Image (cartoon, rainbow, N blue to C red):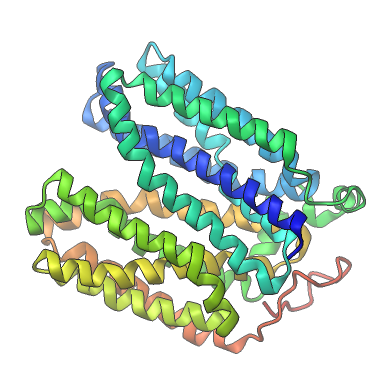
Length: 412
């Protein structure tokens, strides 16, 4: 990997870290902020829903535009939108402005997909998973530091963390504008603007979705996202109900999971992908996660819980990195942004469904139910990984010639 590529990856790491740090600064405080303006509990829940729905709609569009116009212009546009949304949140004088800020943040919330697409452009297939792991590491670090820092700053007012998040977005915007070069050559961008594969239409995304192997990977990604979102969204309530943990104890346990995930994605993923095929890692990690989530459902004490959380963090870290890597190899280079945006939308869909369904299961069936459902979902993902991915060779389309026809079967 060249020095220029390493510099680009460092900038992307810093950008993702600052973005996730800003996001996690305000996320735990939104309910309290909204309640200060008279929001009821159902209205507070809608804040997260409108943000997720906005991202669900916008992410594939932002990704596809980056295929056509370049990564850097869309990153800058996305960061401008994120900065404005956080600034609106910090200066909000009404509940309506808070809602508008969350909608705007969702519409410009394709930053992570754009960062992954950028990394895909500047790395080869052998180094891609290792490079993509830095996004997972930056993501994890942001979520480890952000909530604690946001909680500390909230003593000075709920607007203070939001204004700091706006400042962090402004720093990211300056870094990208000043130091991050475009990952696509001018010749490549000119060609892509004329290519029907990068047209800003739903049919173009639909064609990419139905490429052989791509659909299998997206299905595995959706099922995995549902299972993991059931764990993330319902863990705090589960810990309170099942183990009688208080807020402080729960935060310590989640920090433990976050640190493990950062270590896997930031340090271990390069060694794993150099020794094992990526599809083998997907198959094994899916199997481990199915068992570990079932173990979470049945954990009766904190010691057992800490033991099963380690493989959850390990397997989740591997899948968070290797699934996007495989997706970039299942489509042509000019379709990477669109397909990563579509993958982001599916993950967002899972995050909309999981909290409500997990809450119902906890209330109606018992504390074991969300974990058991998550384990069963991962059992389905495991079956998909072993039955469908095993039929495909390892070489993908990311190095294929652009003029290949859509009717040709990719081998990603």
